Length: 454
Ligand SMILES: *Cc1c(COP(=O)(O)O)cnc(C)c1O
Figure 1 (tube, protein in one colour):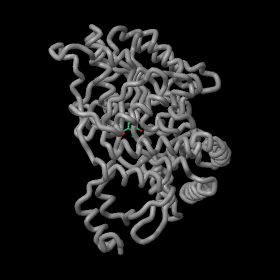
Figure 2: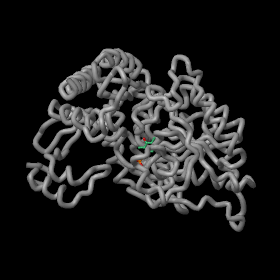
Figure 3: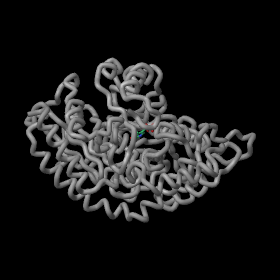
Figure 4: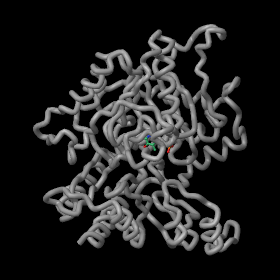
């Protein structure tokens, strides 16, 4: 019995199956399978209506930073709701959205000081794509309308964001509705498209990016990249120096560099933003997931004075950026985001990650030895474990085997919630996870992999 509203779990499950259409979910299977209904959160744990606890191994879809129901964040939210729940940014300013932009400007890469708010990662990227093109128009180069992207890239699910994505299975159906992007090879070294290996390749995949730029000289508005890690593509980690070389190429060919930090931002890679590992300053940066610590939907597309000023002019010049969402800059979300930034400092969170990242790396080296683990990819507090049918040849499990899902179902029985990316098991816990909890997460995943694959 759920105490909150005295509706039984059975009833909730029934209504869920009857009325809720879940994202990225084959509903026929959902209707058949036993469901967990979450009622509460506590630190890194989710608690269902029957009191069973699950370690939140994927930070509630990569958003949670300081744990669930963190007291300081709850208080900031309660305080704000008694002052103002929402007012629009169309024609008005609002206290929290102003302070947040000023604070974020202090921590984003230098020169990225202009914040265009929206509500989620897809909109932040949609805005970035439109902004980049309109920038080219105002710069007298309307023929620059193409985008370079990478295979296995993920930038969200709205049509513009899907058009610059590179994951076939998400795109096939919608192909007729999308615009074409120029697809560069992914730095997916385990399965290199160019047949190279990381130790000796000298990053020839970068040459392929340059080739695209040359062949489409004067036609490209922007290059879109997830810095350091292609998340949804399978936690594909780029070789050191890759991002820096991409920045240099964008400069050389006068292409706007759009960094999608939706997953990597707010400490995930061990730095506040992934670009900072390589001292790269993109022209446009999208941030969302961790921004409000996993509490509320919030996003921003951040840009430089160079891009921003191209939109300035008299009203009649029609240089206005005609884009906006109703809940843009919501004060509740901004208040939580502000408190979250405070907690980063108060808890010295980034520094506290370093030993955890080191122990994660050590544990992963051990897991890499398992007979059906083909590749381990690790960056900061994110990792992917790619399972293979044959370790020698790297042969994948067939898609229909649902091997990743099976492992996660095993983990669930052992009190860990995780969600795979195909055959890749994902590790993406709230950043505050303790060493003991990290041990539980890794032990359970290792046992579950063993149970399913051996
Ligand atoms: C999740 C994600 C998005 C989309 O964000 P939504 O809030 O789900 O729309 C975009 N880009 C990256 C890199 C992501 O991981």
